[in-house]
Length: 124
Image (cartoon, rainbow, N blue to C red; front, side, top):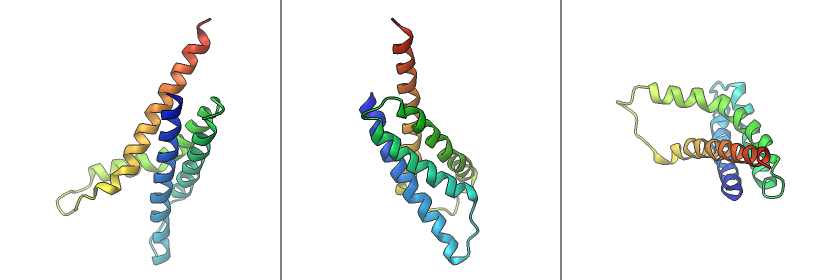
């Protein structure tokens, strides 16, 4: 479970950081940006760092969860607006959904790992 959580955190962090950076770079052509984009990129980098450290220190899961929360601050409203958008004129690109799917998986693995760790600590 620890290795799967670590891989999920690194993959999610890398994918969301890359897509977040890509979205932030639209500001070069005048698109307004949100400060939450920068917060999400920082959260993504925290996820990557926590995923690597998690291989040696189980307490890094707390840092990983903080990174996930920072990332979700931008991605949750973005996903909600994407789902509620008018889909009649939009072409679906599966590659655009990969960071979102990885973020959900990393969140699930992290919570499951934290819960199993707490159960192990509670039992003698």
